[in-house]
Length: 273
Image (cartoon, rainbow, N blue to C red; front, side, top):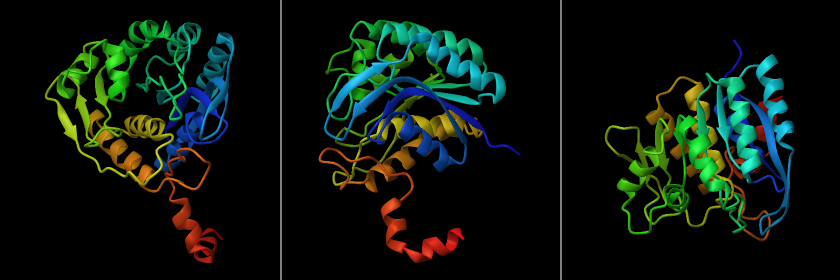
């Protein structure tokens, strides 16, 4: 029996820490088949996004059309979009896979601080894609931009405000907060999903990993809340095990325990033969 088929619609990170590279690693970690529709190619490393090269809107639609026609799509994760034109293209592309649940990670700023979503594109994201999502997964700052609410709005009211924009559920992630607690809301009670802070870890790609794991678990048949809980756990562990010695800036998260595997050396090699 074939594994679930997951499609990432996102940008490419040449440093391998975030974007489709992080998404594909997270998909593999969950045991699902990953596919991609690239929205933009970035020239970036751990310290900066040097250049962003958006793909033509039609190229985005055709990537989705190709995989949907032949392979099929069981769930979609949407990441970096960048512009109004790209958002419009993704909206068209979603019509080709209308039955698959969509997890939208509203990527606005890179770990290095570079802006990845045009200011004029926020309204298009809010009105065209957020209502089509099964789950939206902003961090605190992204949630405030999406809703237009200020810093004074408490977290529980903020996640309700995100949900009021039309998605099936909202998860306001707390990985950059003092408590690392996510807030989940699907119209019932606000649910706190606690996590652990890992200040010595590496967090580049943590948001991509979280939303990708969540989408994978939806495709695997888990409930939205349970998918959010599992995404929290995997993303937290990936930060804890993050590759701190790669690059001069924030290192990439690690969903595979690469350093631990490397330390095992020959024992791991024997297991693969």
